[in-house]
Figure 1 (cartoon, helix red, strand yellow):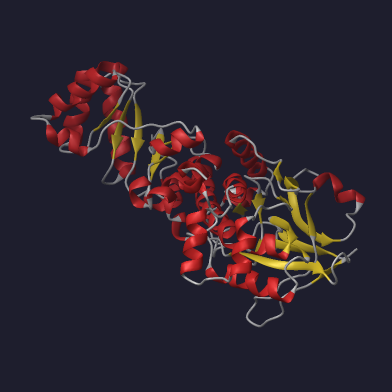
Figure 2 (cartoon, rainbow, N blue to C red; figure 1 turned 90 degrees about the vertical axis):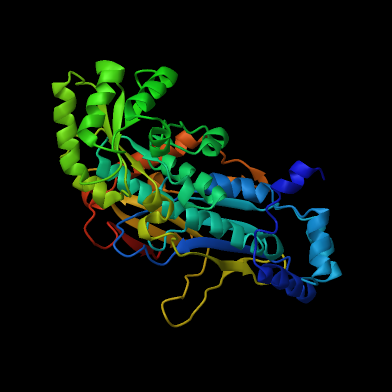
Length: 437
């Protein structure tokens, strides 16, 4: 296996007990029983009204790349993680099962069967950690981003949190934010990898480098054109705005404010720009924004927002508490699937059986319930089924452009009750019903 393929392997993005379970199941003879695993969450983060599924495309890549390299197998042997029989199984590992689930960008609720993985126990169990790590992270970011873009009311929001996160998490966060409506990212790797528009001009250091603010603005305009965005709060804001228009003229693209009382300053800057004839110059605000700060700026003359720390940390909820549970398995090799479920105290039980899900609308077309059931699907719910095929017999069939997931999320959010995007605390905006056919 060449260096590039080895680098792409996702096989060790897993917990040790996945492989020790595999070893024990191989010894007992149960490893090859057909099994069904399900990803779901028992609750939404406190105060959230809906969740957003993100990361599905990355999960498909990870499953495709889940192959053990020779150096990885040598390390597992050296560390005595598993025995020789298990190492031989891992050396030939390829996922040949099937995956179906909610399409990326869709909304979800407690108990939604987001992803269903079916194959032998041996094939499916070792995918648990990598699937959950991707979906928990990306969905948390997308949920925060969705609240921010809803609060922005159509004004563009730019993702600029790379310096506040692990370098690879930053790329994934930019992808999830774009899916949920962000207009662009500052992260070039995210732009290169996922085709997300990138943006950015200059920081305070650029102004401080020059002998005067006018020199800095002149250098930036000479380099980037009059349509650039000038950062105007390094020294005196009003003087900077005057200098910016003097240098760039009324064709100046935008000014950025990064500190202070943003509502008050936005009004002052808008008035000053208009008086200087720069009526088309936009105002961009940054400075530790979250969905609440964005909503508070709704009445201010702001044209766009830049969000960093709050976005890449899920605005206080950096994970979604998704779990990966066995819900059905063969009773005997080649036999029928039988439901299995965890029964325990503390709200950590599960519901057995392979499930379907449908989002039932009311007569106005607004979602009113998430219906989850096992067995035959009632005819009246068939048009509203949510699951789509993602992998069939080991082959990825559900890969799609990121823009498709972005458009889906816009439609899914619009189909929820209006209270879904309220920032006040509340329960999930629709209930989850168990269908007993």
